[in-house]
Image (cartoon, rainbow, N blue to C red):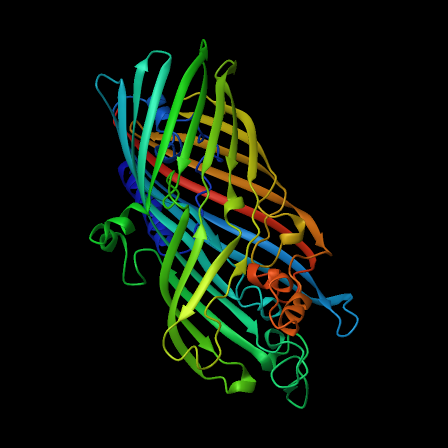
Length: 495
């Protein structure tokens, strides 16, 4: 009966992982969840700090994990009134997004337990966008952004007080983005194609459905939808190296059983000395605005974005009998990602007036995260842990939009390890993240900037917002977000 129970749990976790590999996902266990982080022997340490794997029990380990995230988002839009330019109340949206995730990892101690090697198939970042909400169409209508990764790493005990870690990763990323373009707004104030032109018997104005052109972008690294990890391995050397990242880490004994850790993580596309720019190629499908006939057209697409690096710092040590204090800090330089640089070409796109270069503003900033809590030591059949976390968020209030509701947030995380068999450990965790409500009145996105750009005959100074991808319908409004994350994994320990 116990053997059947273990087999059933393993198959359930594996099924959840397989779901994750085909769906948008986020790995909430990579450093932020209980029993993970820069000083913890967690599977995610293969990516963020392989030196800490030496704190694992000796022998061979297999980990299979899955997660399910639910985001509840509320948006009360503000619109720019025609003529006056003042903000007025607009439509309200309340929606949820579901994001499953998963990973599988193996690691083993060698050289009389003075070294450890491991490998993991995982998804280090994912973003699932709000979908099927027409009032948000000029910012987002749906899609996902993700990266799958194969990481391999080793930790080496140079001395009893000093551990060194080194890892390498090969990533495969993709972006599916759906949005609309206001063809009247982007033609200026004229009465031929602009906001003063005809849309169903009256002037189009801003955000008129008759002038709404819909875009569906599908791009991936490795040369398009038919690429993939194997295609990268057999492709040009430059394509291969542009998707390789590295991890460098050290863990040092501070005093007694207190340890400190420092690690640097360079994701694929962000190796030192490179441009930090990731290129993804694929296709774009365009549905013309109703006033133009509503026909479909296809072409080629390329999206460029700059990838972030991260630095982790952690301290861990006993404070109560059987309990450790666990603290960590993380810096993620997301300020490198200011926009999705979208390029569209081929087919008959030029003939129907599709812009060849169409940036979408992100306006990210560096993210600083602090966390701390108590975790039971790895003794006995059961151990518990809890943490609190604070993060400044990736977007300043003025840059918040339906595409990125990433403001100041705080979280509480709990988890439990349960030994269900001499060699099998079941882990369950829950994370609740609350994002501070944001009221955006001075939005970085302003349609008036587009009108001024076009009416100035594309003067360089007047078109700065258009060049940055901000000259689109406003993102002003009130935003709220609450995130729930459930995590489940099973681990096999040979000893």
